[in-house]
Length: 112
Length: 114
Image 1 (tube, rainbow over the protein chains, first blue to last red):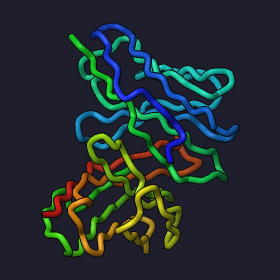
Image 2: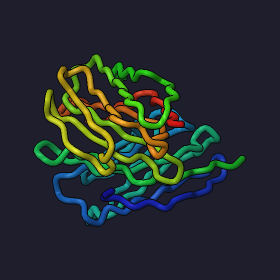
Image 3: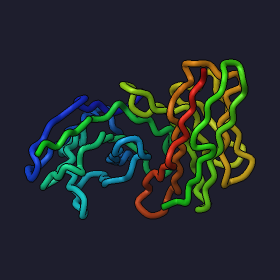
Image 4: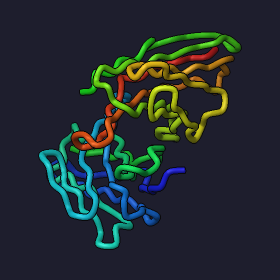
């Protein structure tokens, strides 16, 4: 069973920030949060990950709450090409189970 | 890019026939995964491997078996295909302890069981 829950769908206007939430209330201290996205029927692609601190890269920002029970992926200036299904998963640091289970993800639609 | 190749990319078969999907990787990644994707279900884990000859079940393993005799190859077998196994199958790999620890996915194999 997936250890994360996400809203099934969200809409965002082009040029605005897209904020995608993920709940992982049972996350343990040695688990990372990873985000992926899947465009059309292609294989999912990595976006960003974090453990405790907020992270930013050229694609997105990841905000993790202090209790680590939820996180938000932020696409600062969404474009039409960001329309995709976004998945968050938890993944252990070394030594944990590597059974990586995805949920149903969030279908983000960026509107012109 | 982990150099993941899935084969075949497309296959149509009949109910009751055996089918084997192959995932080949060139990066010497330890972990390999098979997922299926169906409308409304997201990605569901079928089986995964944490080393040569080391495999374990995922969420939806019934009707599927896997084998990993070499680091680079992970085979998914449907012993007797059923229409409910019509799906897109994705292979993924990653190397624990290296880089960002991300999963790399193949391009998918679309299987239709008539």
